[in-house]
Image (cartoon, rainbow, N blue to C red; front, side, top):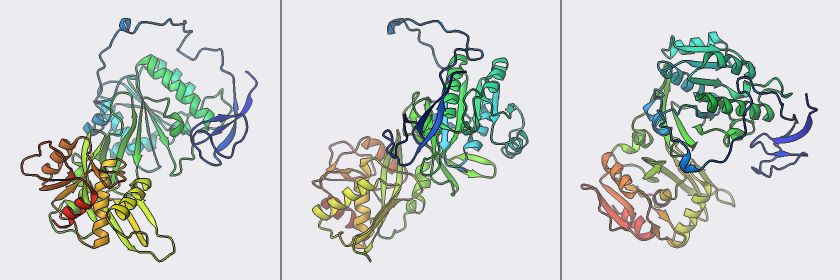
Length: 454
């Protein structure tokens, strides 16, 4: 075995350095470097891979195209996030904080995929008896091969004889390669295990799912290090304390990124939510008069139009510096909206504490939510409610103008489908859906007048 050398790795992003650094140049995190041994690559072939011959460059016109038959995961909403289903030979990372339902989701997916072929579930965190108890609770009693092993090399050797169609690793932090002298879950082990799984998935055309844990501050090595290796990255958003779970595709080589699907979790597992807008609106979907500081925003998440409720609270500050807190919103955009309101709409917010959030737990970062945030803050500042029949969207410029948002027709169609009767957005000559009164505005001052005087 080659003599190891020491190197330092960032536990957040995997950046390698020859010496310890206080701040990572890759992700700019502080105090995340840890020392780990690095070994030279072994000349021995990986089990089942054999010796590969050198490939020659090929013209793109000469490359054979293969029709990919996607596999249904058992969740129609998740299939849409994945781009139409599970792609054979793909490597999918499912990350999120502990307790959000990652193991439950992959076990339900394994049960649904087992009818299409052999599925191997490597349970590195739990015993087979514990996994069976959860499977029985989810209504899964057969079709899955359980493998309680943390030695990934032994797992791959066994799979060469089984030829599974789907492989689940739960979790990547418990897997280890025996020829890497480091503890399980370290940067070196996670990187070697991920590389071996990627090579196995591409060579055997086996769809592979990897479960990884992430703390709130992202200090554990794993999913953040693996994002550039895998084909698809699915993250559970939120703290997982509520009834609903939001899964977002942060990366997808076989479909569009930033798509979301929503699940309701109970004792029988995860259940799809077909209408996320109805969930995120909650009480705002009722046509009763709402209090001040609330506005419904027509947002687009990935390719799906979703209506959410933006709430704001404005009050006199009790300290020298006013507080600005944003929940599920970009704090930088909130600060920009406040500056525009103070300068272009004449609102004295310099002595006010401002709190803004998106109800339901969905994080909104697109610029088209600027107008809805501004209307919610103006409503709270003037203590005048926005009509429950109004939906708003549009991007704010620094001069106070309301810029057009993308996919205008889809946003308006979703608002009309949910029963809204009016919309405040940027001025446009595009046709509006029948039965929906659209008010086109050119600046934020006009928008506030149109929404609060409704």
